[in-house]
Picture 1: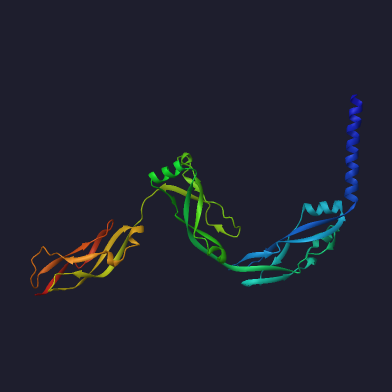
Picture 2: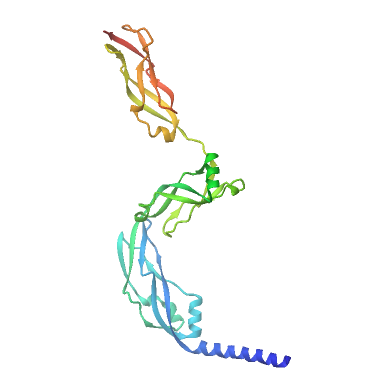
Length: 296
């Protein structure tokens, strides 16, 4: 019984060897796809599209030669040294496929296309906002209640200008409050478009600390009483506040007026009061006092 089993195994092995030998030496006709690859692309340009992306051809050769070819399959290279912005047509030259000759493979059917169309676009970059996403409502609530934020708030992205034009923000992978203490970082959602790259793949999760900036507003008119003329009649101020608040404030949001509680008479110096929007701090003003020139 045991002897019969080993005879069956040997017969099976011999059958496999014979089958392989027949198929390795037999001539086959197969369809192959050769990927198109580019070289020497100009620094200021980037391929927006390649059509077609592969060369579909039919080859003929022995099974052995086809196996060897597939083991070190090479792409079809196109040199973009002289490429220009817009559409570029490159005639397909099958003589470049020396690797087929090296493996004694014959081309039976050529590609349906005579040219490869490569559309070039300007290489561009821009900064876009990073928007956090959340695993669940509990994680979102934790993020907000603890005044957390992503850092940096904006990330530089690069790619074809045509594609970047319509991108205004990128998102993070879902934030999970349970991972925050052990790992205060989170990955950005990878770009769905291979041609667009990010300057970084990770952002930090930090306690929000508002950025304080300063800004100067010049020649604000000073309000005075009817019949009272002052000199000078305008004031310049330097204020500070959170960047998000101060960037949305203009000179019309401030009120400057003389201190009407003081005695007003010709040649007297009167203090100038500045009324500020909420959240804004006065750092300096010029002048602090004005002189009364005339009083009716």
